[in-house]
Image (cartoon, rainbow, N blue to C red; front, top):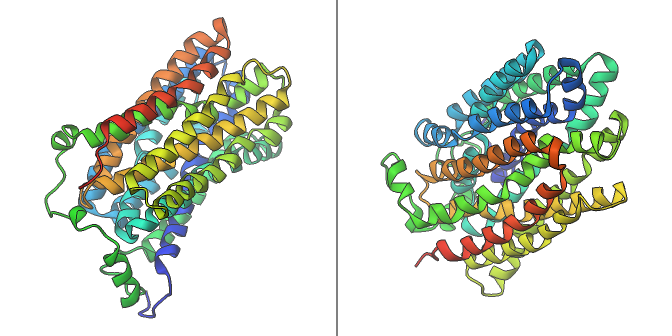
Length: 415
């Protein structure tokens, strides 16, 4: 690495992390898009597919361990290990056979991929002053949506060119390339030789003194005793099933209920994720606008979450929409609303916890979110053939209103 200074280096760091999020969510989204083909070829039932997606969520629920690793080993090495692991596991999907084989690989994939959100929050906490964290968090979460945008055309291309297995090879191979770039470029602000003294001072001046690293390893039992942790974890428990529906079940819904073929799925299944990209920027923009007008930062984030929860009620009408394109439009609203509120509550981990514990705290909140996806996905898989999708869309439309109430009740504004 050269000793030359690069202006606004922190934004190149977040841009590099966007690439990780794109590949992280591409790797997990490929299965959902390929599900109609794989389930037919492998003779996997809806209930078995529910357990396959559930195995992934069980793996991701170990986010606190990933966060603890990242807080201890540091982002550069710790996250490189995790990214390399999920890339290799993604490529190993070409050897999967039967629902148990897929479930085992998905569990391992979730374990490795669960590092992404804790890593993102740790990076934002270290590299950005408080007033820029919302925007930085929104930008890197665009990668999550964009990875899901890429998945439908990639799977369609792979199936038409060779088979669904090719999509897993491409997604995993790109991840290994990214790891090499990460190891070359990433360092902490304290040791990055391309960071100018002016920018280093800008970052340090915007950090809250109360969140400075205390030097001790984070204590999970101590974090679990804090109201603030439950204040961001429980809303994620209720919010994240929407993302599970869009990532894992939307292609099956479009194929089995709306009658879409693979070409139509490739044409429309990415649209809710494009809308989600806009939500990634909208939520932080709302919070920033309110903060500039004198609203306390924590309250500004809570109002942004609440606005997203109100918009999410449109999701309740997806199942009863008679026009399939109206259903797609409502799903797009759901994607936009979800990322509006999700990015907001995820970012709050860096507002409430010390630098040395933020990844662990974000991991614990992520555990709650993925527990919600697990319960929802397994329940949906076991019941959808009997009751259809409509009750689940209604449930998704109202859960975030409860989450907003919990966010206002449990999280305390810093003094």
